[in-house]
Length: 213
Image (cartoon, rainbow, N blue to C red; front, side):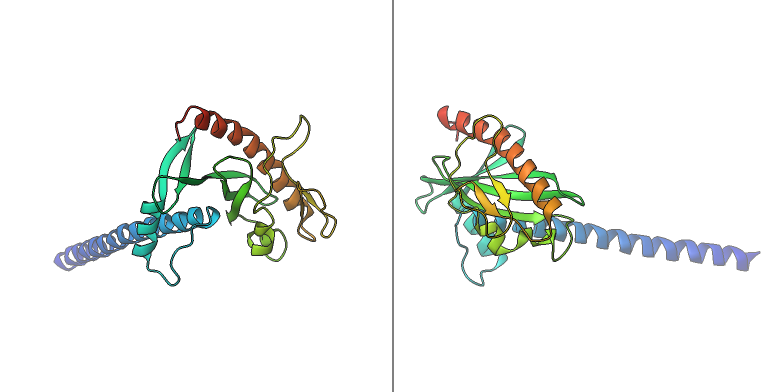
């Protein structure tokens, strides 16, 4: 009887120790994951705003640059990142997140526009479930760089901000090369990006007119 009681108590104490260790590791990992996500977000915002971090800079230097050159605000129900010049007063652009359904799952992106809200400064698609080598190529530089400096003119009713065309056929300022073999990803990205811009740009123009940003 005593032997059985000892075994039960021993297993209980052992389980308690292991549970405590695992819980402690989870807490530490959550903090690290949270910090890494924050750094990743800061890097994305700086990138689309064309604010270059120092080469081979540390995480602390990246965070300091973000703190100096980006002011956080809100735009309706989403965050807004106001990019600042070296003087920390002159606005160089506005960045905001957008998201929508891709072919296999949600696509998340960060978009930046110029201070006059007349052109795209940059865009980064940073989270998706699209097929590697096909729709997943939306994260490649050649695809994302197509958006840089594109005019951001509010389209007439029934038209879109941007159209993804078969590679080599894009001609108008609103047309960009789609990814070969990723028709559905291109269609869905084109649709949700247009919807997000039509929802966001008027809010941004309104807040700017009211001198709230």
